[in-house]
Length: 461
Image (cartoon, rainbow, N blue to C red; front, side, top):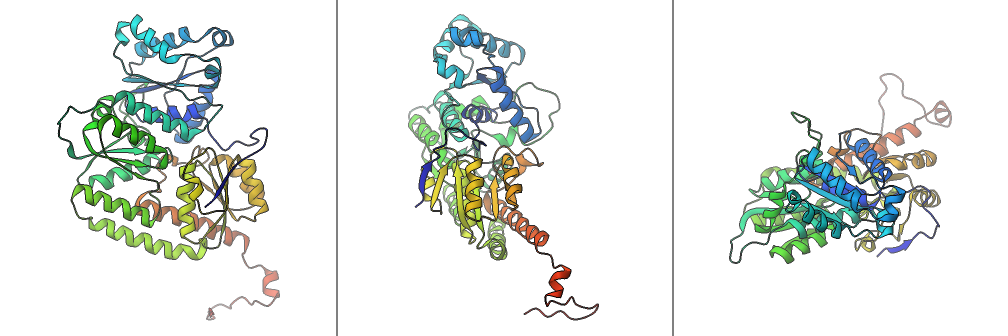
């Protein structure tokens, strides 16, 4: 078991974590016709919007209550009211999702009370879906904001089925963690549909941020799960939660609608996908399609091929807890040593990561420990690229944000196919680094190695 420690530094020098309100807004982006609203200063929203746009290369809807210094001191009711009225009138969303920020949490704004006053004062908003989540950015991290928002959506919008109502055996709720990309969600959707199941994803980033071009501009999110679909989730036969962070939302759904759930803490690797496929076969009553048996064989072969290159490597990984657990477990299975593990927030999975210690810290900690422990591969989001350059080691981008490469939304790591492609990507990165840094030179030949003559047979011992 790993020992989990907190960094003792007075401040984050090179932050690894993204803030909690951004994680909450990210969850709202998986809803159809949604408008996320950050209750705070304009800068809070501008920073988050910049990250989203650079990561997905798409237009992302995000609004602010634009709190000034005076409004912050006197209270933000008028700003919240005006923002909601403007959004409701001009953009006509299906739902408004409100996340707090550090400045308004420090002041102590009672946003739940504000919403009750606004509903009473404006009849057109009396039954309009508005969900508020407390997400101060001076504590917790991106994953926590996502976790709280999904749980709150379940508590606010899911309707309990009538007593004695039959559940639809084909319908399955899926609660994906923030570490899954739109591409991952689409892969999971395909896998479930191949078993005859009808999945409802909450949130559904695969429908809203998969990079498709709409027929006409809309100021709200395009695609995703609708408010009516969320309300009907209580009639599903099962809930599947992916990532330890989603246990809270699954428990809330079970409490409200009585829907049984199962948590899959990771879907990256051979054995986790065996368990997942077996569960889909069990709840659907269908045999495993032949294509997944073939994909399983391809993954096993990929692991065999790649372990020669990945095995024995010392890794430095910086990521949100569930993504850290996912990647470190897979690479440990391939024989790599997780020498440095740095994360952003507490989680029950951290103690089970295959390493000596896990540090809740920043990218400076990741770089310093990687240098001390002789790591030869770094994995984190795009803000870690300078650290990898200084250490002169290969760098694999994973997590949020990823702004200096295309296709972040389509990166795939779940299922047999996603795990296979991830293994090849990392192994090829290691091979390319080996070729770049260890090519034979004329000095090598003078030291006793002789280059083959044209047509001469080369013997490999």
